[in-house]
Image (cartoon, rainbow, N blue to C red):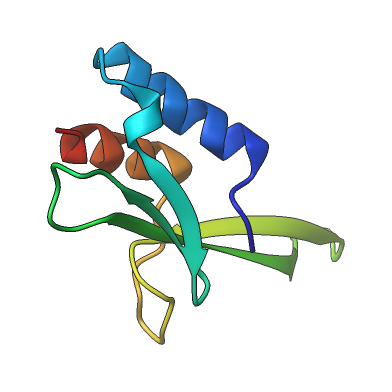
Length: 93
């Protein structure tokens, strides 16, 4: 799993809206978790994206994309991309 261009673009836009230098942020993937690091922050901002297919009410397969703050496990709370963006904005220095 990699950062999608659309995800990267939104996160960079949020960084720029705060008036921060995008060159000081480091984007990476480690063990299935996407990381955003900044020298002024002790902890990296991390999230996981999980893609799956589900049967809808019409018995048709549809793709489903879920986000988690940690690797998904049984009972893990699925979050939306908007919630990831909101948490990222709060994490920014």
